[in-house]
Image (cartoon, rainbow, N blue to C red):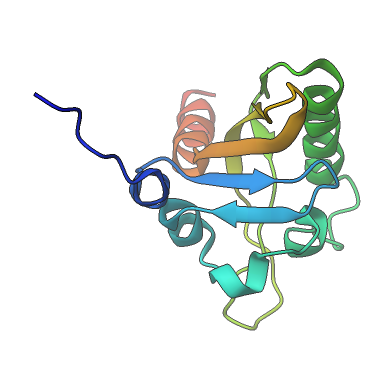
Length: 146
């Protein structure tokens, strides 16, 4: 029996976990369909952009730490060549509905190195699970028991 041919591009695009690939300069190199659905973005609006231009902090939120925390994690991956599991992050997202308002969102992000043939980090695989609903349920349960 011969091994089946695997189309890795299709596997990446169709996998259910949201993944974005980022260059060492923090430019967006690619993302899969799950990531586009989760962030309500189009591929052409993200490709080649600096990650924090595409996903900035909410300027109305003076204490926002999303970009600084994510940037620090990505720089750790580049410096160490090791996966970085971030703690729960509040990182508000601007919907594409044209209102300009940001939505409060919570994420469990992971950043991991993708190595080139020479062993150097050539990409950062950034995958996330949005847990905003769980955080809101937890806050509501805490408030109800207080």
